[in-house]
Image 1 (cartoon, rainbow, N blue to C red):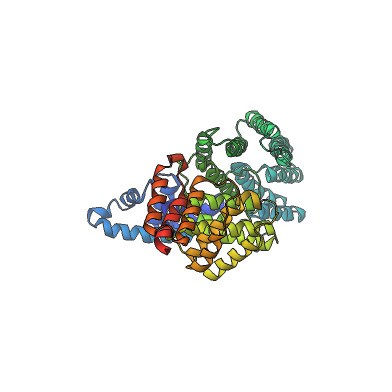
Image 2 (cartoon, one colour; image 1 turned 120 degrees about the vertical axis):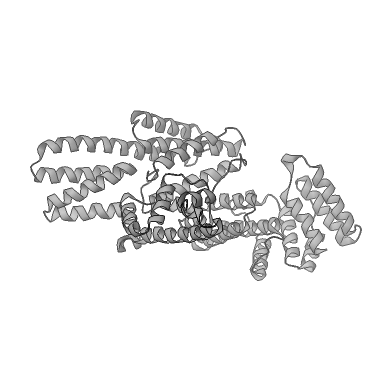
Length: 489
């Protein structure tokens, strides 16, 4: 389904060249052209508004339902055009060697070395305008340097002086971004837990750069993003310490007006990288401020997942989808995390992912049942075999042995392996501190197995305990446990 949100995202990702090419193709499709322009101008708050705007005349003689069906077809056609335009890349781009701007630059360099200075200058001038709009200073100062050399060969010495000044400005802005990026890497490397002094200094440095070049939207965006990233980290240590919603609103407002703006790094797909990084900071922010809405669609998640995400980012996505109860995307990201562990031969990543699968299965029951029970049993066996593992990060994620064993018991029940569950629950002895809800649940299950507690009484006790919990201590896992008792005993 092509939502307006998805269409808007796809239309915003077009470069100036791609947009020109699209509008040329739409010259015989006036309705598609109107829809595209309205999306760009952000004048379509919802589907009904879009139908009324585009089919204003037709609605005088046609029913709304007919217009609605036509609109769904129109959306589909426009989305197909957008996808085709974005896929119409060169062989170099498809092989992941260069993005379009770099390819244009090297094409101009080839023209320059062949002595075609005038043609090279014409193409460089067009490229310069795109780079200025996106503020890609990394390539802009090189483009202006090549323009300067073409102008010299053509004897346009006054124009050379102007170009040199522009090149100096571009390089100065690029230097600000590069130096801050180096400082940022140093600040985060071996950073003591909670000690953000060096990171604070990086944010201050980026703020000064944005103030020095007030006309630069990119430097402002980098400063806002850096601040949001730092505050999200501080909130992870002390939840709710700083409300970062204002930062997100400013970033969104800036990108809505400057949708081709580059952010931290200029890579093969710099716009997708930018959108991914902003989205990940939004979901981190959501963990502290769940009332803030985070918009996304399935295509966006698939696109982000294909961008070689760090394992830590995949964990954030899993936790976010668990909160949203979006089990489809949650299991999709779990599979990506599993592949990450296999691809990078990371024992820690593989183990943590197996544990996350066990956790998600519990909370998703019975809305979403494991599609492959044999694979789940294999995951359980691997977790049990490594229950005492000293792998880095494993103990932090799991919490303690008793909790992990109980999660496995519940997954056995989900798979209808009651004998295995009974055998395991009987041997659990609580030695370490657990959440009260988990302790109550374990004791209740043990009594159920021994026959000292009926199913009805067990459900009653668990529901009574759940209702008595304060709002900030409500447990989704306890609710899931009650559902398992009702379904499997």
